[in-house]
Amino acid sequence: MNLSRRRLFLVAPALLLVGCGGPSVLPDGPHVPEISFRHLPAITFDVASIDVQQPFVSSGQPPSIESQIPVTPGQVARNWARDRLKAGGADGVARYSILDASVREVALKTDKSVTGLLKTEQESKLEGRVEVRIDISNSKGTGFTNAIATRSQTVPEGLTLDEREQLQIDFVEALGQDMNRRLETEIRFNLTTFVKP
Image (cartoon, rainbow, N blue to C red; front, side, top):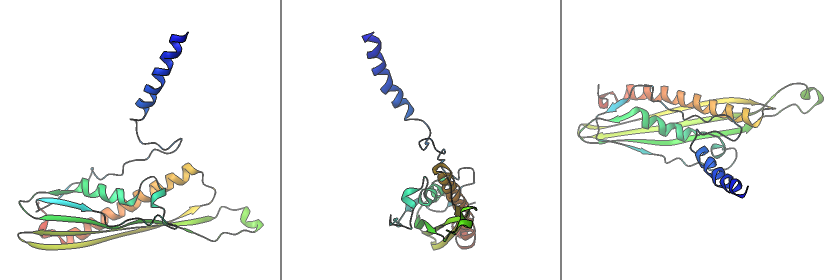
């Protein structure tokens, strides 16, 4: 009997450790995906290296909510550089700077009367903004471009915690897609001479 208990105490912590290696899941909540761009073709610059920087730092103060959401625009912007930008030249550097990667949640006015209790209103609005600058320098010259993506979405009242977190994940993913399209456009117009076929 004592031997069985001893085995249970040894096995239980091992099972907990095995569980730690699984996919990223919020406790009893939605699966938190890694928002990536690996399915899209790489953009190869005629440089020897890609330098990714993030000067943007969240204030951590309301109405900013970057520190409270499951996946942030900053993570998505870094993933974009990792997945889509490649160095394919003999010299030079492409500097990819994340200047803004913010999400704000702004409260909206709701009807506090009796009639307001009978309807679902929008209690707040998410406002997301990503700004990225790419500076390129090699032996052939220099160039730069800026890309800005913004998105907003209202949040209905009465959401559960899981529903709110899923809405935030979907919002940041959509903002990432907006950022991807904007960056593609800006690179095509302003940095074509540095893109290798």
